[in-house]
Length: 37
Image (cartoon, rainbow, N blue to C red; front, side, top):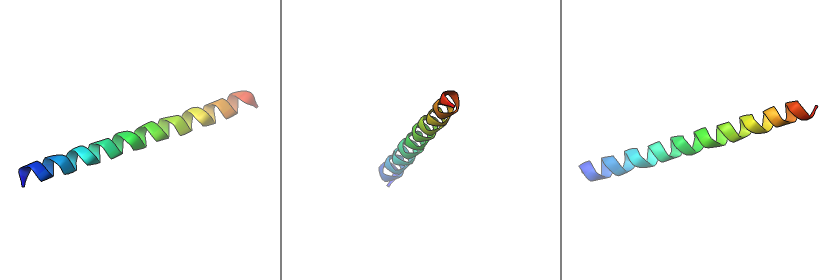
């Protein structure tokens, strides 16, 4: 039972990290678009 909870938490952490990386990439793309104009 404890092991499953630990795995679930690790999966959630990985998902949050992935979302952060995607958000940073999207922000970087917007910054590039702003610089081009």
